[in-house]
Each structure stands twice: as structure tokens, then as C-alpha cells.
Length: 141
Image 1 (tube, rainbow, N blue to C red):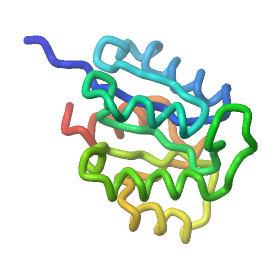
Image 2 (cartoon, rainbow, N blue to C red):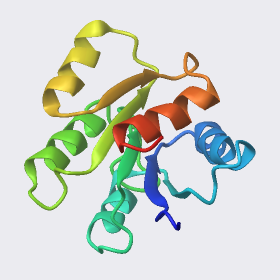
Image 3 (spheres, rainbow, N blue to C red):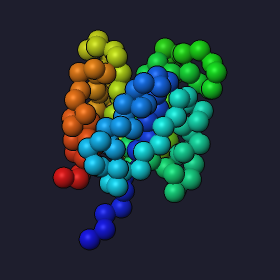
Image 4 (cartoon, rainbow, N blue to C red):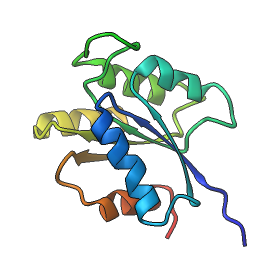
């Protein structure tokens, strides 16, 4: 039985973290179960949302992001992006995992209130945990 790959979009400006996420799915033999796309700014992320063939099932979203390529980091950009996705009928069904270095409970509560499905702290989540979270959120075993 063929299971359609889960489309995942990583929105992360740190190249090391993008490589880390890519390698997690490759090293754990899950690359055939997932189609992973990586972007380093919110403008590029939005391009994946408009076409059904590229619209992700799940987004790993950093909160401090540049709006566009070669721009500086905006501390509120990820929050605004999350709010925009969850208030749009075409994108509100996309599952979102915040993958951030923030450890503050107020920030975690804020993003969960905005509609994020999970909040993971960078450096505290093992690779197997990331795959497990992706499967749990999307109802796969």
C-alpha cells in the first residue's frame, strides 16, 4: 500500500538548523515518507503555499526570521506569519510546529494561542522526537 509522502516546509534562517532537519529525515530512513523543502525567509515560504502541489502539510517555523532574502532578522516575523496562516481559510489547516530557541513560557503560550500545534525548543529535541512529532500531528504511526 502506497502512502503519500508528507510535505514538510522548514522555515529557518540558520543554515545549520536547515541541514540538521534535512539530515534527520535522511538519516532515519524516512526520506521516502516525507518531502522536505527548506527556505530561509518568509517571502520564499509563502511561494510554497499558493500551489496545491507544493502546499505543505506541516511547517517547522522559526520565530525570529527575515521577511525577505538578504534582510535582517525581525523578532516578530514568525509570530505574524503564524497568525496570517491560521487566519487564512486556504492555509489554516496546515499543521505548524514552532522550532525556536525561545525558552520563555509566555512565548510558548502566545504561539499556541495563535494556533501553533506544537512548540519545540532547539537543542532540546532529539532527532527521533522530531519525526515522532511530525507523525503524531499528522495522524501517522
